Length: 93
Image (cartoon, rainbow, N blue to C red; front, side):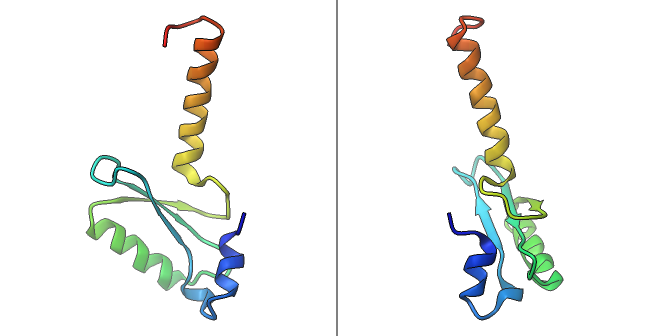
């Protein structure tokens, strides 16, 4: 998997690069992950924060590179727990 810092290195403008990850459907899930890399400038972070707020999204800052972002990591844990409960016949589907 290509990390944000690896992708940033190819842009020639590493200070202006970071990931902005929307969740689907956007009109239902108003959370957006903003994942920084070590070279992301503070101005870029502020710009993306303001942009997210201007389109009624709630920004979550991912302070270091992580393959699944915050929201997806939490969702994966929830889905895994639900499958385990159903598989062990603790709860119905």
